[in-house]
Image 1 (spheres, rainbow, N blue to C red):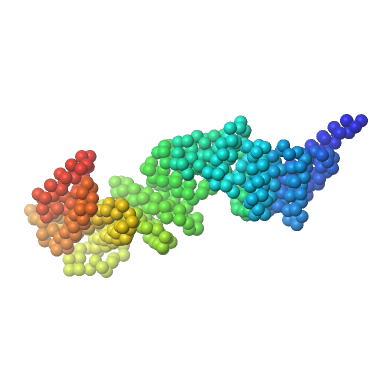
Image 2 (image 1 turned 90 degrees about the horizontal axis):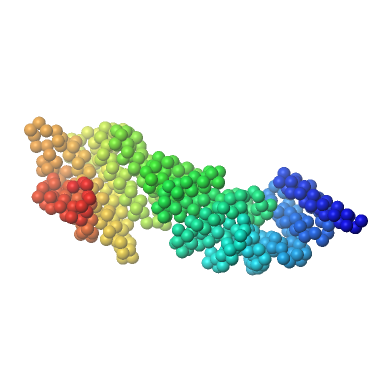
Length: 518
């Protein structure tokens, strides 16, 4: 009977579509095309068969594993238009027509098709992602809000866009966290591989770019929100999930943020390791400046731990590696960025070498600039150590100049110069202490061996202390409420005027009663 014949044709049509899907998954595209074409012949008026054939030809336009066909472009559009006319209440054809027009750089028609698809199905994952590529987050917000009101398992794109809007535009990380969490519960974000049209989630104009798992990116965005909210434990767990979801292929910016969290948590080795991975990728980008800075901070913290454990050689290695990282920035980005923070950190790395015993520098290269009458009485390793620390003086002076250059346009100018001046005073005082210790400070035996006595006997030490006092004084003039500058001034004055030194220490404690150094 006609009914049985119709039923048989329907079942054959459905069966051929299922077989075609299996052929597509196994990259047997010729067989898939044959089965889909036969399915349309079995039931010419069936929407599902017509749409499956149309989407197949659209897939062939972008699939690099498929044999190219000159007719695919025009045929895909024709079949999609035919499917759209078959059933105007179905959103799929309009969404894929948007993909087709977008691939032809016709954004106006692509936008219209995506909007038509979302008018029929507000949560359509292909149309939503397509419209996101065309519109700004502000323009996309109404579509996302409408999609999130639907009880749909594939509206993760809308939740993610709302999260990006809350976080990037509005600065509301607390509400963004909720949006990202909702997105990660949706099948189109978390369960990738379950949608036959998943390949159309990507930008059709950049099919050569290796796709990144959306769940990994969303976990990374959630982790960044936690980081800005100060929830470091939650951020760490989210970053770990992001790494798992993306098979360890996180973006440099996400890895950089993860390293910053580990640095804040005191996981210095892990932070430095992540930065090493990014910097060894072979490519350069603006994010590399921040990565190198974070790694240098981690290396300085590791050096401080090394000193406490008596690992002086390893400490010097960490200091030198951090210095090399920061010096490389001046080569890569010197024309585009202000290096105030970089040069100050560079000075910190050089200055910390005061904590090391001089014998660690016995194999270091000696700078001819340290030659003077008094330097001839210093051992080779002490001269190398002082030469190393003196490079920090140059870095702090450069930081001062950078801050002064921006003086007219930066309201924080006095504080920036004051901070650099205070650090410069500390560096000069460190050089004086190293020199004084090498000349016999604290050796006892009834001789005058205090640093006060050393300053009176050595013109070099007195010059360093005088310059240190001047630097601290400049910092205090610019920022009278800087307790660390007052404390440093007291330390420097102790070698020349103990009474005035007490006044400086008292002033430091008045400003900051928790200051431990005085």
